Length: 336
Image (tube, rainbow, N blue to C red):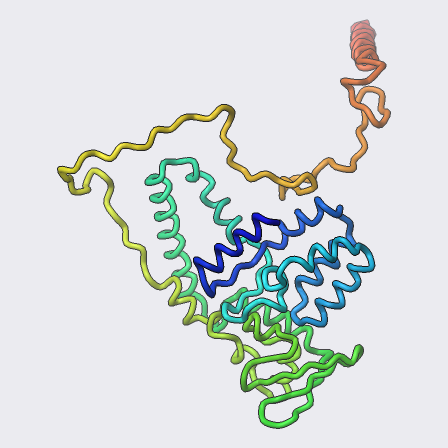
């Protein structure tokens, strides 16, 4: 915790004004090591982190306090602006709680990470050059205004807006009520805000805002933030990364040759994959054998295999000899 506080202080001093968030998966990993796992504790922590308004966070923390007082106090000690959606800044229009973006990038450059620095940087440059070109080609073929993934999230909010009813209060403000739970939120279409804070945080109209937009018979896609629209995507990937010639065409200088640093190979095979948690799935394509009972292929009994079978391999050997003898007798009978 002291190291964590030191890093946070360094971030505030060197990167003043830059928001620093924690990865919820790693936070939960540390949380689980101290207080153990369990579906109830995990779900309450995740629900508290994902709540977009303070009252929702507070309700989940109170439930967690009833289950495990010490675990709740451990979370209270962590600044809410680092792991709770309701305390995130709305500047970036991003509510991501995981560092999956970094994990995906590390997985992509796995082939180049152990190369020398220039070779690695050249591999990353050519990869990004090709990726930008493919994304520009996809953009030219796409005819929509809002990009596909934000549009899917908007469609999900439109689908969930059916149970919400908007009452116009004047100007661009609405009081939106849930038909069953009678929850209420205030939506301001003029300033693109909702008291649930989802619209402010993400930039995509929430279900409450969609209900108000439908009341005015307008299109929800017109209220999506400019970050998710075609122009922003074009500004991000529109520029080309210039190709360069190989080293055989580089200009030569009279400066002394730069030699690579002295490298001492450490013992053991170099590790490429990150260290996984004990209960984390290693493969996404193969099913694990955890919680499966072992069955012996020799005797057919459970909880051991053929290597530790007390009967040995006698059954299989006798079966093989029996089949060979019966086959020989059958051939003799066929000849007569």
